[in-house]
Picture 1 (tube, one colour):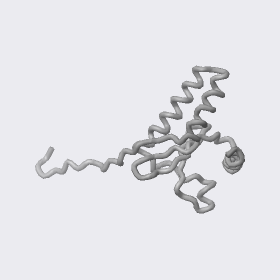
Picture 2 (cartoon, rainbow, N blue to C red):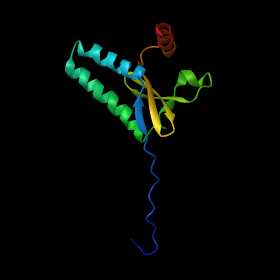
Picture 3 (tube, helix red, strand yellow):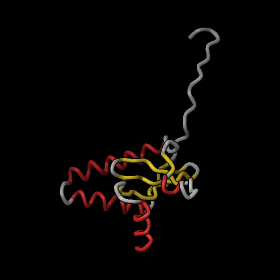
Picture 4 (cartoon, rainbow, N blue to C red):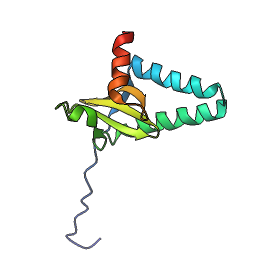
Length: 120
């Protein structure tokens, strides 16, 4: 290193803890169980993919987009990342990323949320 040269590093993003809500865990279980009926191997692959995608939020939660269907009604605290064909919906709460749901991206979000409310 040359005299006077700085050893400045790019700032690192704070690492967060990822927590799954009971609802998101049930979503994940339902997806895996459905796929496992045809292929245990495929089910385990999907489980790994979804868990890895959620795990990536420990250091990269902000890049997820605001959920478009909620943004249009001025609700900005919910974000999502896509692991096709699923949408992982989450909220950042301080040093925690809270995974709220794993939804089928091929279905309309409004009908999925209505279905959940009716089951409650």
